[in-house]
Amino acid sequence: MAHELYTRTNQKIYFAGLALEALGRAEQGAAMNAVALAQAEREAVLFHLYGALLGLCHEIAGYYRLADADSPRAERFLTAEALAAAPNPQLGELVELAGNSDTWLAGLLREYSGLWQPPRAPKKAKHDVTQPLIQAVSLDEPSPAPLLDRQELEQWRQQLKSLAIRFRDGLSEC
Image 1 (tube, rainbow, N blue to C red):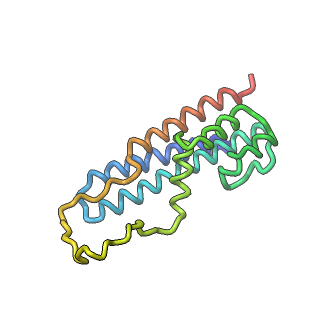
Image 2: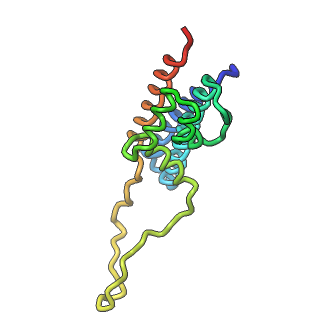
Image 3: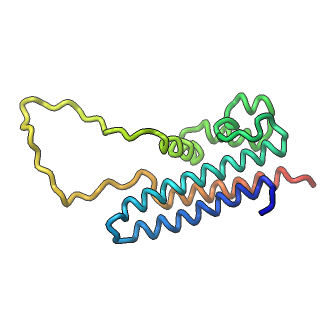
């Protein structure tokens, strides 16, 4: 593998695609651990998408010779302070996307950050003391759908891929 910054970004985008294929197989599988396999692949997709984002940040930082160009966290590059220290259009677009909570990039950062949070039990309202303590439960209820579906993850991958291609066109010296 060449030791160019773009190779890591490309590799992570490709790995995210492989994990998405495995996620599709896990979701269609009838194995007893299909739910666990799907969750593992969903997390793998997020891991590789974040790595691709970080790789893209490294590409931009390398081109503009930014300070802390080898930072291990993408969030380090996606701040107004980092943009003010070295203004450039590519980083400006990333900062804007990351700052708007409705964008795919903000969703990616939020979901990736959530991977590192401990599990939390859902909050329940206090019970009315006049209601019975024992409740009937149906075992046939479907499990809740995951927050992130495969199509949304694939959209994020395509967005990141097209962004990298467009940025590279702007970064290349003519």
